[in-house]
Amino acid sequence: MTITALDHVQLAMPAGGEEEARRFYEGLLGIPETPKPPALAARGGCWFEAGTVKIHLGVEADFVPARKAHPALVTDDLATLTARLEAAGIAITPDNTIVGTRRCHLSDPFGNRIELIQDKATMGQ
Image 1 (cartoon, helix red, strand yellow):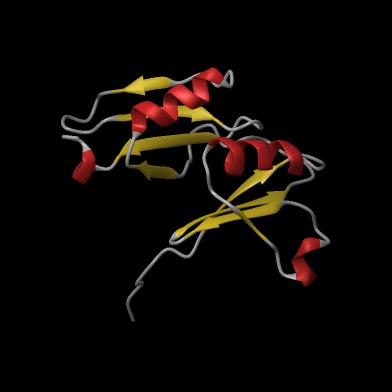
Image 2 (cartoon, one colour):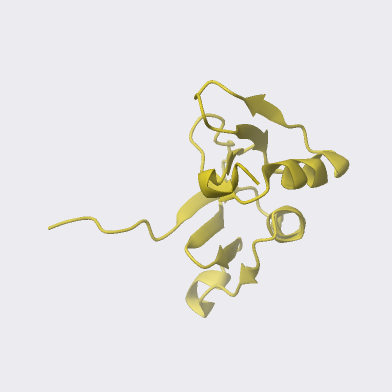
């Protein structure tokens, strides 16, 4: 038996936060929303998927944001993406603690930690 892939990451959000999630994940990060299966849609939340990137947000009654645990998303243009996020009022915390890696941290609208990493194949561009 071997684990062969990660299917998705689920983050929690408070009830009624779907529009904020759409503005952030689809509008700012550019990850399109995908419909939840009908049996799950009644629970609230929303899913964002593009290729192998799958972020699912589920409603949690006693919501507490994930401030340490986080998804790390790879981008081919960290500078442009962080500029877009900053223009939208999102605070970015650069992190150069790993030599040879460009990355930063930010929070989604609910306080969940998100890491962005520059795709190493595009770092010289």
